[in-house]
Length: 371
Image 1 (cartoon, rainbow, N blue to C red):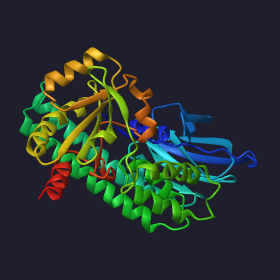
Image 2 (cartoon, rainbow, N blue to C red):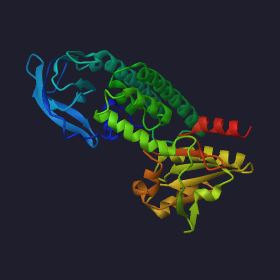
Image 3 (tube, one colour):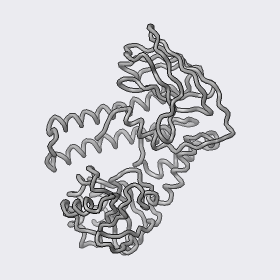
Image 4 (cartoon, rainbow, N blue to C red):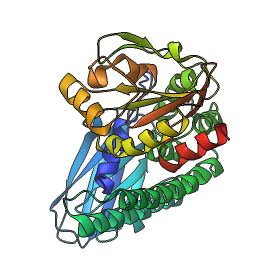
């Protein structure tokens, strides 16, 4: 598990597909601030972009802690000031004049006069920061207990249950928050904390809530584009057919499993969480294989030997296919895959029943189907 707010921000910005509108005109803004308990002599203001953080301006920190940023944005834009321990996120408008006060030891409690939706944004950041701190505590527990050793299966299971419960609670609170905000850009920001596991229904609701007011916002357009893509693999839709070669070079199609309930498991030999899930999948396969259930594992490997070795080592006795193209595999865009492990449960008629099922959630769903 990788944690830390700055790492999370990097995931957020990589997931934003920012639109472009040549008709928008850049306008100037100013962020004047004062920072305490700060060691750095310079600060940098950056904007979220599809490929990372885009530099806007830098500022020298004066002896009394004051600094000033200036820049231009075409529309209300989420920006970040990176600090030693954390970061401050701002919603900067085209003609903003923001007066910022921040304590580097507790940056989440900053004040920002002249910024719209300050409290809503801060509450979201605090919710996620509390989650990150709790996740770090779980990671520390793991390191203190096991170091570089792999914990026993039962210990792994307990750690996963604890982490999954923590994540589920965080996601639930953030979704309620997003749905409660009207005429706001904050819900679009929240969706990026929830990707890639956010349900299609939730994203579709946020997409429809924006209406015409945010139709031209890069954040709204990014979400709308995502919703359009996800609609192709939404629950109840026919699962797009997959035709790839198995480990013997024979073409295998997902449609050839018609008549069975099939778990399509996207994984790779190099993916540690995928490999940790292998014993559970073996148990599930053995439990339901005589009840018209099967697994089709689709690997995002690019090394045939490593792929085959992982299959043998983990004793995965079902059908495996791959084009050995890693993230350039045709299935990545076909199923909008943003991370692995990723699963799609398909019914005997070839329609999608559920996605993103792992651990106990997967067991519960199958128990429900085969009761």
